[in-house]
Image 1 (tube, rainbow over the protein chains, first blue to last red):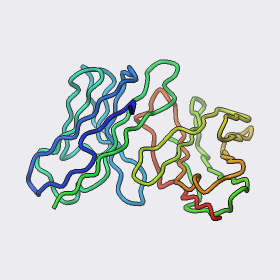
Image 2 (cartoon, rainbow over the protein chains, first blue to last red; image 1 turned 45 degrees about the vertical axis):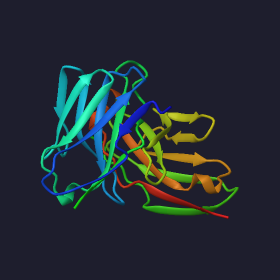
Image 3 (cartoon, rainbow over the protein chains, first blue to last red; image 1 turned 90 degrees about the horizontal axis):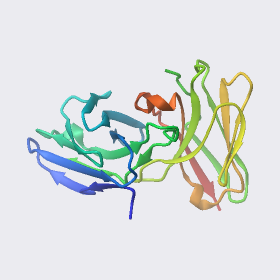
Image 4 (cartoon, rainbow over the protein chains, first blue to last red; image 1 turned 45 degrees about the horizontal axis):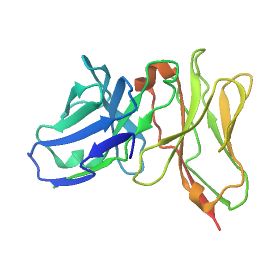
Length: 114
Length: 111
């Protein structure tokens, strides 16, 4: 089983609909992240969380919200999806301790907004 | 934050050694250099990290000169399965959220 699991893996939704992407991790890490990747480009950070009570905006947070339900769970919501939010979304985790030099990514969630 | 520059694409042949160089002229004292590999439609995967000189693991080597303004990822004896995008990242790992992911280097291995 994957250490970082994202659901759904693929979703097509209509403009204006609310969509939630869920992420769970079994690595016991305290830090979790949501990234977005557009074709041919690098990753851009949407939100990050250092622990359950800590939520921070990333580079491109407009139009997104997140919830850290538990140390192992971090969900991303698009309150009213729009076509330019069509992208590949990645959840990731890292450790705040001495081993925090590695970011572990989920397998990604393809979101298409029509 | 240190900006990195790496080639947009490279190609090579199976069995060859591939070297991908990344420049990071404004690297800070506390910054580490980390390389990730990404296959299509998958999340990036950590390859190697270093601070100075040379680091080697089971899949790659990382060469960092004394001035640390560049680094070279070396992949020995590549195979078709090494075709992927490789990202060079520079930053303090304690601030992973500040890492800037460029477009990476698309490496294509030919038979």
